Length: 148
Image (cartoon, rainbow, N blue to C red):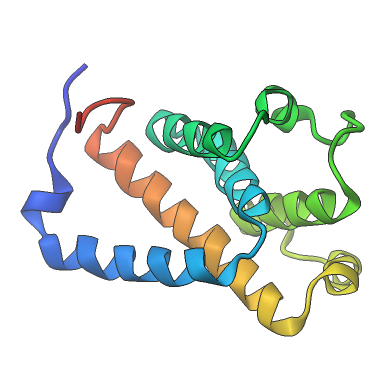
């Protein structure tokens, strides 16, 4: 397997712009576990090995979350996720697959039970940002360890 191109070197300004959004969002989330779960689930849906590897490792640095990682793709059947995490995961899936069904008013209202308007904007921006990273990584042929 080989990297198709190093997009960071090919267009440093684009990389810098997306990193600025990532850094902003990172500071918005007090719950770092929630933030990493969001990035892992979206990366699973998109099939991005590079981001899945990176964010699973980032989550493990926060504590023993192996069960969360192993069961994330079946979160609806796994009782270890909190209600807040479940709502976030449902939103992450809906926004990632937005062309399929959109985001229903029912889901929006569930999200608002757990998140303020500002937090909802942060969630949507975080979902969009990891989707962006996934699409860059997959398009350019990134794989776990390719920049090590």
